[in-house]
Every structure is written in structure tokens, then in C-alpha cells.
Image (cartoon, helix red, strand yellow):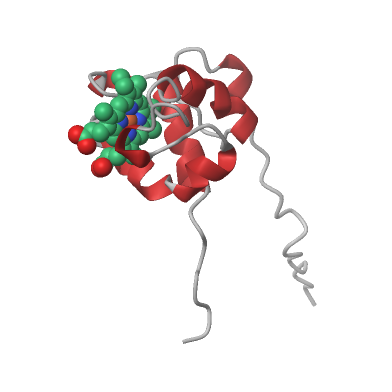
Length: 115
Ligand code: HEC
């Protein structure tokens, strides 16, 4: 008789990939940045006009909580090229991509599991 070997499933399920983040000079970031990563981006590109003193459109973007509060409008303002004001190419810059990646990662997942 011939015994076919049993197939062991699930043991080798780990997917290993090397993050190119450390070499991402010219490529889009593929990992989700943290708030610490994007805080300087917001500081340098948005907070000059969106702070407690000059809150254009009543939007202050000084903290992570501020950013989360305005998550959706911030995302659409950037992807449409409206913000930062007069800098439509921001969304295609390294900084813009990082900020958009962070915003995307803040989206709530499955808000209502049981309907
Ligand atoms: C040079 C000043 C300036 C900078 C820099 C700037 N904004 Fe604004 N922002 C404005 C002004 C002025 C408005 C109001 C525009 C209007 O309603 O016509 C505005 C409006 C907005 C709005 C509301 C848009 C809407 O649909 O009503 C959002 C969201 C926003 N900005 C986010 C950002 C973000 C995020 C950045 C940085 C990536 C940024 N802004 C950078 C001046 C600025």
C-alpha cells in the first residue's frame, strides 16, 4: 500500500515581507505612519493657518484629537487639492502621502457589526 503524506495546513501561514520603509526615499510609504510621524507634516503645512489664533474655516489642527475630529474633511480637502491652500501638489508629495495614509488608517472599521 501507498501512504500519501498528510498535508499540514496552517503551520506555514506566516507571511514575511520586508518593509521598504527604511529605503523609501523615492517610493510611496506603504506602512501606516504614526501620529508622531505625521505631526510635523501637519505642523509644517497646516497649523500655520489652522491654529487657535487663526482657525480658518473654524478648523484647528494642533493635536491628534483635532485631526481626528476633522478626519473626513481633512482627507477630502487634501485629496481634492484644496488644502494646503494653493498647494494642490501636496497630496502627491512624500509628506502628503504619509498624512493621507495616516488618515486612512484612522477610519473606523465595521461601525455596526449587528444590524
Ligand atoms: C495658507 C493658509 C492655509 C493652509 C496652509 C492650510 N489651510 Fe486649510 N483652509 C484655509 C482657508 C482660508 C480655508 C477656508 C477656505 C474656504 O472656505 O474657502 C481652509 C479650509 C480648510 C478645510 C475646510 C474645507 C472645507 O471643505 O470646508 C479643511 C479641512 C482644511 N482647510 C484643512 C487643511 C489641512 C489638512 C491643511 C494642511 C495639509 C491646510 N488646511 C492648510 C487656509 C489654509
